[in-house]
Image (tube, rainbow, N blue to C red; front, side, top):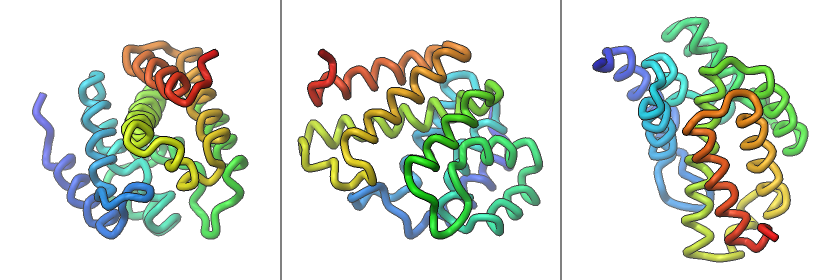
Length: 191
C-alpha cells in the first residue's frame, strides 16, 4: 500500500526538527537514524502510522519536550502520540539520570502494545547495528561517547532485546537479539 501525504508531512517535520542534530560523536545527520527505523518498521509489515511514529520517536525526547508532543498530537493524532510517548524515556530538561531513564523505558516496553514493540525493536536494532559498525572501525574508543560506557550500553541492549522477545517474538526482534549477540561477541562478552 502506498504511503500517503501524512507520511511525507511527518518526514518533512522530522527532518526540520532534527536538522541540527547528528548521531553520537559523528557528522551523520540524525535523520539517517529516523529513516532507518521507519524503513525497518515498514519492512516488518508495520502500518503507515507506525512508520510515522518511527520517524518521530525521538522528537519529544530530543527536540522540545511537551511543546513538541503537543504539535505531534495536533498534526498526527492521539494514537501516534501515545506510541511516541511509549518510546520516550523522558521529556524534561535536564534529563534524569541515565539508568533511571532506561529503566523507565524498559518498564514501558514490557507493557507496550505490538506497534510500540515493533518501533522499539527497529530503533534498538538500528542503534546496535550502528554501534557494531563503529566498534569494527574504532574499537574500544567508541565507549566514551555513551553515558555509561560499555557496561551500561551492553546491559541496556541485552535487557531490551530479551524483554521484547519475551513479549511477542518476531523476525525484527530476532534480528535485534542476533545483533546484540554479535556485539557481545565482538567485545568479548559471549563467553
